[in-house]
Length: 331
Image 1 (cartoon, rainbow, N blue to C red):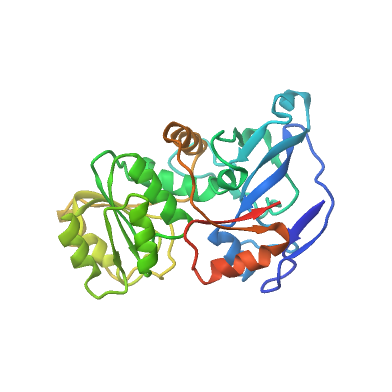
Image 2: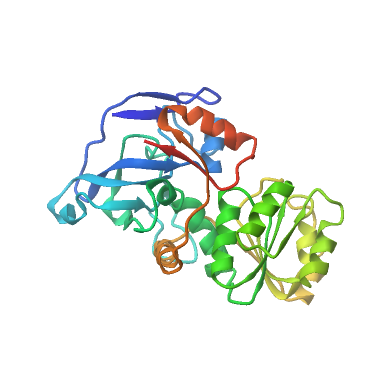
């Protein structure tokens, strides 16, 4: 089969012939129709990720058709259209992942290939209203932000929600989830064009985080926030404490802007704030997300679709953060 292979850090991804995976009981072979990129894939290609091995087939997100099963117990999945939960071995606690938790695409070979091997327990029916490309965009970024917003952030109808750095896959999904739930949503971005795109998707307003007074302007517009979803951290994190309403939940799952500087803890305890960390999501989170997508007929935002043999070009687009929505590979 053909697969996109990373042979060393900072080397171009190449499309080459590799062996088709052999199955054991409980495993299935999914013929990939579309796969999507995540920031994780970019960091792996630059060598800035833990546990990298070479050669590797990257890709955590995928949608396709079950082409083969490893045992009769899974025959019911044969020829079914599916999406794949990329979070494996979560464990028995919904609150946190197990020690042997792993993400599809490293160390296991991922979805940037004609076929991928996964355990049948990670399969879910593809939402019928979605194309292959839209379905492939959903799993990792969708689940991460669904857990951040609802499981951790407890967002509900009428809450004022701030999403920092809208435009990438996670920010766009967080916006779509919050709007569908009836929240009043505000955003930040370094691009006026992305802020306007967010308004078209239902955001009330947005501010350019490059402006010196962005936090004060948001405070003026919204009057304060009940839930803040942040994947940047960095030197401006203290502003999030200032514009939080009493009892607000600030949920973080990334650090693209660097570490958090020293904070004034008095703001946290006096306003009864909650600072919450989250990573990926549990099987319950994934199921709840898929149910939410079906109930609200949500369509993921696609930035651009590349053929599988242009995977390196797709990574290049992610590198400069110019995308709005998900970058997808079509097999």
